[in-house]
Image (tube, rainbow, N blue to C red; front, side, top):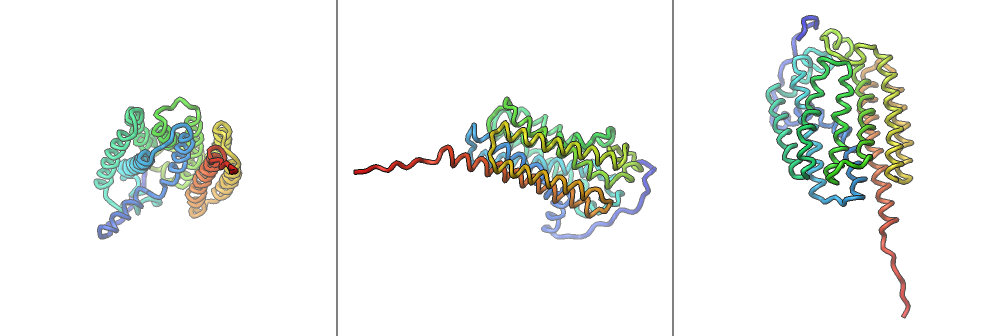
Length: 314
């Protein structure tokens, strides 16, 4: 830990029962933030299922892999950043929710679960498993050497729709998963820039790298606006190439509004408003997207394969 950081006593541990420890661990790894990558992965699976029907067990294992990968990534992040988090005023209470050793153990268990899930899907998913593991774990270390750690986080989450598509079709030859992954990359890159504005002073003291710490908050917010504009354009291109219907385009209009609200909220230095912009607005983006994709595919299904009842006369 750099000596330039002002050291204060980290909070003490609180004695909790088993259930309290479980909920504490879920809070430590921000399990609720699974709503960010999950809708994009499910959207990829739904679009891919028009080419290759997906089985119930495949859906189960896809969800298994998504949750286990995300759990491993966050647990490793908490373990790697433990010495920083206990002295960051925004994150110092995390140490009350678990221990560094238990966090690492959770990461190992989740990684094993992820590998098992990949093996249950297909050979392509199993072959790409080491690459996925490197991506979801590696981004946690990038803040030590680059101001573009936010881009690496975007890359890690962009793997979710790619993995879901590969799990469904056994192939990544279509441009659609790559396009959706590009949208996720821009989206996550942008909202992590917003989130990182809360830690500018601490990052500079601790000699950690982030775009806001190096270039300032106004520059970070400008780049976030550009990235979210690109996100919206890429998602439009995805809907057009995937031949999605009217519900998707209604969803795109709502996503456009949600992104505008997010950037209005993040102009404030109020921590509560920034958290609202980060979590609620981005969770809303994912939920709107999955509704638009799901409704479009459902209506296409009704239109294309609804049985035609023939009336015969005696």
